[in-house]
Amino acid sequence: MISAAPEEVIQSALEGIVPADHIYGTRFRYDSSSGEIESILSVPAGYGKVAVIEELREKLDVSRDRVIYVGDGSSDVHVMLHVNRQDGLTIAVSENKYITQIARRTILSDDALSVLVPILEDVAGWDSAKIRAFFETHGFVVRDWEKVRTDSVTISPISSGHEVSA
Image (cartoon, rainbow, N blue to C red; front, side, top):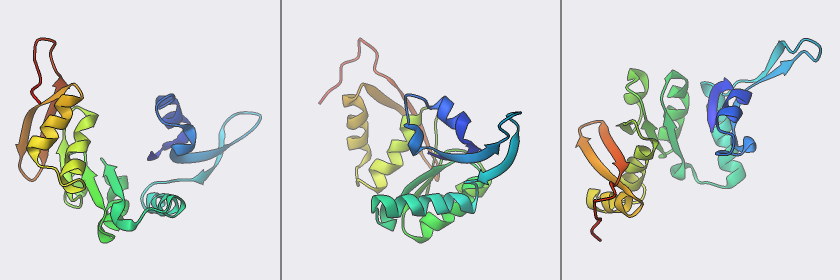
C-alpha cells in the first residue's frame, strides 16, 4: 500500500488487514516533548511513489511488465506514466480526469473486488464468462457490467435462494 497520507493513519485504518511493513506513507519526525511534527522524513507522493514502486520491484524481483498499479488521484499520475512506459498495468478507480486519460483501464464500482476484473482480463486473459463464473464460485454475482472505455461493475453477495450453476 503506497499513499501520500500519513503512514500512521494508513496503518491504523488497515490494522489487521495489511501488515504495517507493507504500508508506505508520508513519514514525519516528531518533537519528543510536544509530539508536534518537526519535519518530513519521506513523502511517497508524485515521483516518490515511483521510487517506492522501483524499490519494491527490485526487492521482490518482479519484472517491470508484471507491475499492476491502482490509483485514484493526481498523486498517481507520475507512477502511472512510469508503469505504463514499462508495460505494466495501470487501473484508475475514480473519474479523476488526469488519471483516467493515463491509466490503461478504468473501473468504477462501489466494491473493491471490482478491480479484479481488468486484472483477470488483461493479465490472466480471461473472458467475461470465466470472470463471472469465478466470482460466483466465491459467493458473488456480477450484476452489472457495462463496457465502455470505463468498466462499470456491480458485485453483490449471492442471495441464499440463488443457486450457482457450474
